Length: 249
Image (cartoon, rainbow, N blue to C red; front, top):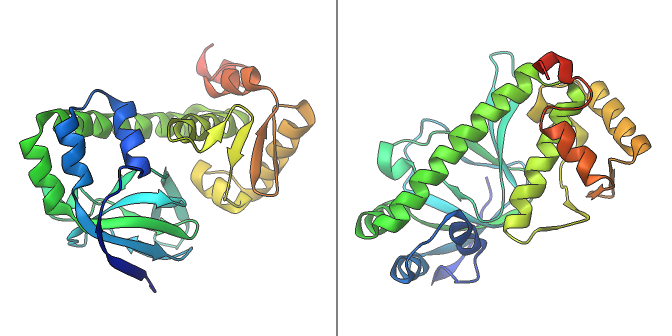
């Protein structure tokens, strides 16, 4: 992996991580200032590069500044399952300071920029500022809930509902950090990658996306997802609408 590293600096208050942290709950100013004092490097990671490997010992954590990444697993025969997406404002790898090893393999889905810092420095800040510890604990619980929802999506939702839930969740997360508006958001994913995230064949994904376009729900053009009918999208994402009989609705 070729990583470009810039000169050492402290984390900027303009980093998306601060908007994300404030969105999660009330944090005292001293805790935010402590996070802003983290010393590290801005790094550039090329698309397709693994920058965290599951089970390895890593000393750095990463605050994603721009670009997308993905956590994924591989089957024994080499098939890939994307387990979650990492977006601007997200933290990656900080759990290594708690458990000693990385919990996931993380790959750059696009060219991305991240602020890399010593994970143990964040741990010191967490011990000194309980409000931040509570916020990150709540964030971890939210990630577990998101994994539960992903399991429900894969196991019980129709293909149409899976796509709707996936896009609605991305829309919600990106709006929180100012990377989406009421009309949609940039979507730097191929249909193959979307299929890997949803356990669908490429043909099935393409067919459902064409149906969404035809019905005016949403459309993907030139790397931009445009939302045509937000109400219908959210209805499908909730497990209602087409295929809802499978959920007992």
